[in-house]
Amino acid sequence: MATTVTPPGRELIASLRHRYDVAIGAYRDFDPRLLSTVEHRVDLSADAVIAHLHLYRATFDPFEREHRVPFVLHLPWSWPALPMWLSVSETSPTMSALRLSLRSRRRLRYPKRYFHAAHAALRNLESDLLCTDG
Image 1: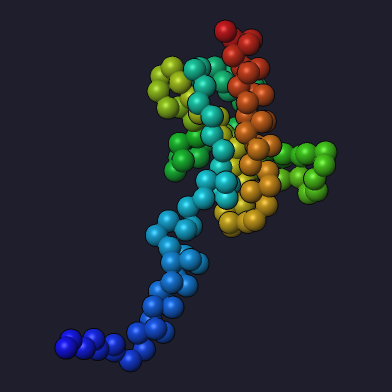
Image 2: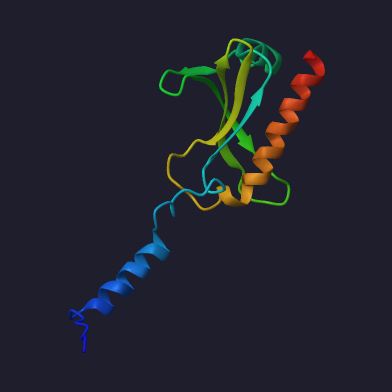
């Protein structure tokens, strides 16, 4: 006859582990819709994008390696408008990346609501760039 020995507190440890996995988990913090950055690649050089969008007053961020200008994303059905950065970075000599990111470094809840709107704004910029230069 075999007996199984259960150490004391095993149920407590199992329930704490389950709560940890549900609340945090391995990749619980990585949700692309909660990230405050949206990026689109464009088949133009960064200089061409800067010239077309008239971003001559853009400041260069050496850490992110991108040219930035302050931008406000305002939607008619929502308040407040989002303070964002419109960025252009060079990915190769013939390609660049357009990026919208929050000016705040804090992780906030509202980027989830604006995720689709940020993609739509970049899609409009991208189509405008490709229609006039292509």
